[in-house]
Amino acid sequence: MLEIKNPEKQNIIISLIVAVLGVAIIFIPFVITAVASYQFYFTYAGVVIIGFSIGYAVFFFLRYRQFETFLEKKDEALVWEYDEDLYVGFIGELNKIQKNSEKEKIWILLGIELVISVLLFFMLDPEIKWLGIAFFVFFGTMSLLFTLVLPQSFKYRAMVKPYVTIINEDSAYIMGRFHKWTKAQSKIKNYDNGEKTYKVLAINYESLSRNGKLFQEWTAVIPNPDDPNSIAEAKRWVGRINKCSRLNEKKMSERKSYSERFFNRMVGKDKNKDENKKLEKATDPKSRK
Image (cartoon, rainbow, N blue to C red; front, side):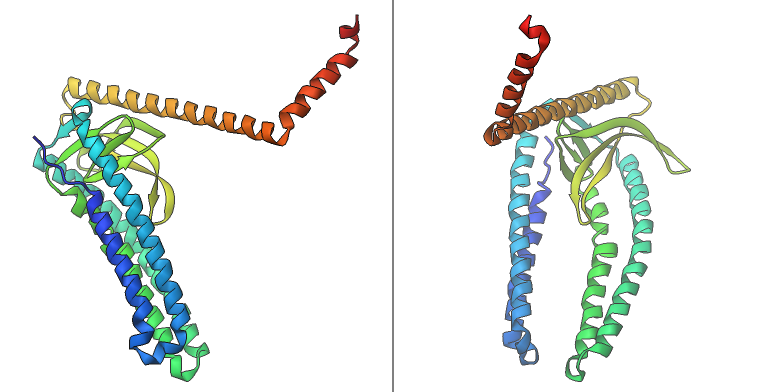
C-alpha cells in the first residue's frame, strides 16, 4: 500500500513560522533603540504579516483535510506508479525550463530595488541613511529567495517518494502536490524537449500562486505511452475531468441565475416586469379583439 505524505502539512508549518517572524518584527523597536521612533510602522508590518500568515495556515489546514478525503477515495481514482528513470528524467526537464525563466526575472527586480534604495539613501536624513541600504539588503534577499530558492521547492516536492500520480475528476496528486479545482481543461499531448518525447496528461486550471490567481498547466507523464490500454485509460479520465468541469460550470451558472432572480425580487425588478407585461397585453389591439 502506498504511503503518501500530506503535502499541505509543510505549508501549514511554514505559515506558522512566518507568523512567529511577524511577532519578532513587532518587538524589534523594543530591542533596537535606534528604531524606537518607528515603532508604529514595525507594529503595523508585524500585525499584517501575522494576519496573512494565520489566514494561509487556515487555508492550508482546510486543504490538508481535503487531501485526506482525497486519499480515502484513492481506489476509485486513476493511479500511476513510475519507473525511477522515466520520472526523474521528466522532472529534470521541467525543472530546467523553470530555472531559466526565473533567472530573467531576478535581474529586473534587483535593478528596480537598487534604484529605490539609492533614492532613499540620498533623500533620508543622515542619521537614518542606513535604511536605504537596509531596504536593498532586505528586498534583494527576498527577491533572491522568491525567484531562485523557492522555485527549487518544485523539484524538492516532485522528488518525494513514492513516485506516483493520482487523478480524480476534481482533484489530483501530481509531482508531490495536491490539486483541487471546480473547472479544468484536460487533454493528452506530447512534451518534446528536443531529445525525447514524453506523452503526458495535462490539466489546466486556475490556482493561487505567488503572483496571484493564474491559470497553470500541470502535466502527469504517462508511464506506458506505447501501451494502447494506458492511452485509452488516460483518454477516459480526460473525458471524465472535462465532463465534471462542464457539470460544475452548469451548476455555478444556475446558482448565479437563481441569486440574480432573488436579488431582482428583493429590489422589485421582477414585479415591475410583470406589471409592464400586463400593461403591454392590455394595450395590445389583438388582445382587445
